[in-house]
Image (cartoon, rainbow, N blue to C red; front, side, top):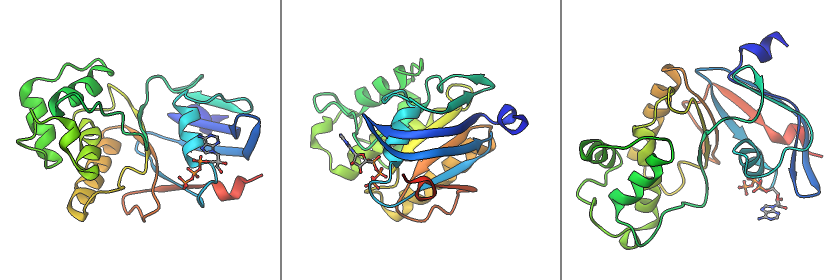
Length: 209
Ligand SMILES: Nc1ncnc2c1ncn2[C@@H]1O[C@H](COP(=O)(O)OP(=O)(O)OP(=O)(O)O)[C@@H](O)[C@H]1O
């Protein structure tokens, strides 16, 4: 168990499961501080299901999870899902503020400006989120990555974070992921594209039932 003890997150013989149906069995992973792990597998293998289990949105019925040396689910990880969770009646700045409040952060207006500039949404602060394109809406959810650090939430669970982003934004995202990992964070992320910044791979196809 030495490796498990040094990992930020360790999965031991985990079953990836939706309801009664096991999708993958015996999933094992050690995610240390500094890891950027690319979670791969064909459509329907269970990648989103695993991330939802780790985010406490679906139950873990079989297997052990050790987080920061204790048998427990990750405490308040950042989970960026397919569902954007953006409220259409709020402005861009209000949505971003809400997403950061969930992690105990009360951003200043300068923080909001910087984060929105980073995602290319400068000038959109007071625009209703219902007026944005799919890619722009996704950028609101990603803007919080600019302000979240490993001391706030050391584990990021990112489901297809690059979907609907242009090449420049993907490059900025990769820089940010690298920066977060270098500062002591760990990332488990899905992507159907190559992830140049990843330094580890978990292939769920190896564990399919
Ligand atoms: N909302 C749902 N309700 C019930 N079963 C679901 C639901 N979503 C997915 N499933 C089942 O769980 C399985 C795994 O789905 P999941 O979304 O985890 O796969 P994935 O590897 O993330 O796929 P993709 O690459 O297409 O995003 C699917 O094959 C499907 O049968």
